[in-house]
Figure 1 (cartoon, one colour):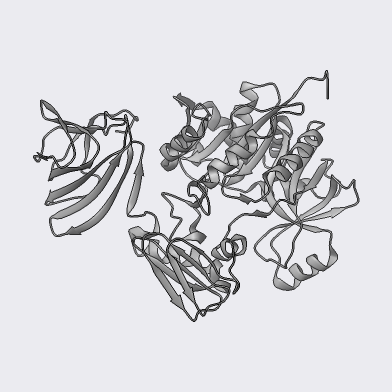
Figure 2 (figure 1 turned 180 degrees about the vertical axis):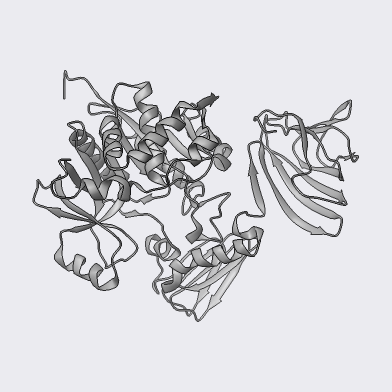
Amino acid sequence: MSGASPLRVQPVILAGGSGTRLWPLSRALHPKQFMAIGGERTLFQLAALRLEALAGDGIDVPLPCVVANEEHRFTVVDQLRDIGMAAAPVLLEPVGRNTAPALTLAALHASARDADPILVMTPADHVIADDAACTEALRRAVRAAADGAIVVLGIRPDHPDTGYGYIRTRAGSEALLAVDAFVEKPDAAAAQDYLDEGCYFWNSGMFVLRASTWLAAIDRFRGDIASASAAAWERRHADGTFLRIDADAFAAIPSESIDYAVMEPAGRAGSGIVVRMVALDAGWSDLGAWDAVWQVGRHDADGNASQGDAHIRESHNTLVHATSRLVGVIGLDDVTVVETADAVLVAHRSKSAAVKDLVGSLAKAGRSEASAHRRVHRPWGWYESIDQGPRFQVKRILVKPGARLSLQMHHQRAEHWIVVSGTAQVTNGELVTMLSENQSTYIPLGQKHRLANPGTFPLEIIEVQSGAYLGEDDIVRFEDDHGRH
C-alpha cells in the first residue's frame, strides 16, 4: 500500500458485561473482563493490546474507545494506565442497554473525532491464543470494510455447541466468505447438523465496519435505537477521559444486541447490504462458562485443568480454580470446583450454563456474594473485609503509591488504623502526621480524616471499625480526587 493514505481505524472495546456465568470468580462489580485468567494481563487489557497491534501495513490505529459501565469506570482507567493507554476515551453507560446502543454511541463518538473511520469492535472478555493470527484476520476485515461492507469474524466449530449464534456462509474467496444468514443459538440436533454441513461458523461477536455503515444500518433496521442514542449522545458531557451520557436519556434507549438489531436483517437475502465473514483460526474462546475455561486450560494426563494452589487426585476432566487457599479434590470426574475467599462453587461441567441461574437466586435473596467480592476495588487501591461481628469490622486496606482517599467523616463509627507496610500520611481533624510500619492512630466518630500514601511503595493498613452502624454508605465526603460525592 505504498503511497496510499493509511486506513483510519477506530478500535472499540465493549466492556460492559457482568460475567455471571463465571461466578464466584466473576461478579457484577468486578466481572471477568477485568480479571487475569491464566496470565498476568486481564482479558480487557489483552483486548486493548491486541487492537493496538493492528497498526502498520497501511493501517493507522489510535487509542481505543472503551464503552463500560459507570460502576467499573475506575477499574477501566487503572487497567488502561497499566498498559500505557491512560488517555483512551471511556464512554460510561449508566445502565446496561446491550451491545447495539453501545456500538451506536461509539460510532457517534468516532464520527465526531474523525471523518468516517473503520470501527474494529471487540468484546473485552474473549481469549485469543494466537495474537498474530488474529491481527492478520482483523487486517483482512479492515480492508474489506473500507469499501462499505460489514465484516464479522467467524470461528470454525469443532463441536456442536448450543451456546453460540452461528453464521451461514456461501462461496467466496478463501480469505473472505459471503454471509448467507445469521442464525440464532440452535438446539443440540441443529448444532450437530451445522457442524456436519461445514458452512456454518460460530459468531465471535467481533465486527469491522465503517462508522457511517453502522449508523445507516441501525437507522434503517432500528430507527428507535438510532434516534434515542443520538438524543442521549447530544446530552453527554466530558469528565477527564470519561464521556458521561445523561442517565435519563440513556435509559430511554431500547435494549438490543448487535445481532438482533442489525446483523440478522442485514444478512438476509435482498437486504442490499454487503456482509462478509473472515474466518478466525486463532484459538478463540469467549469464556462464556466454566466449561469453556476448562477447554482452554492446560490439561494433565487425566484431562484435569487447574489454577492456584490445587491438588488433584484420582480425577478426570475436572477443573479446579483456587483463589485464596489450598483446594484438594479426590475422585471427581467432569466437575468444576471454584474457590474464592467468600464462596465456593461445585458443579458438574455439563451444568456450567446454570451458574447464571444460581447467581440470580442469590441476588433475589439479597446476598452480597452475588455482586461483590470481599475485596472491593477503588480508584485509590482496594479494601477487603477480613472479620466482622456486632458493632465491629476489620478491614485490610491497600493504597497505591501517590494515591489518597477522600477527605471524609462518619456519623456512626470510629476507626483505628495500624500501618502494616509503607508510609501513611494521616489527616485527623486539623492534625496531619506521618505514620510508618507498626505505628497506629485513632479516628474518633465524627472527625474529618483522610488517608494518603506519599511514598513510592504500596501502603497497607489494618483498619478496625467500631460503632452502631458500619455500612459503606456512612461516608460524608468533603474533598475527593475522583469526583465522588
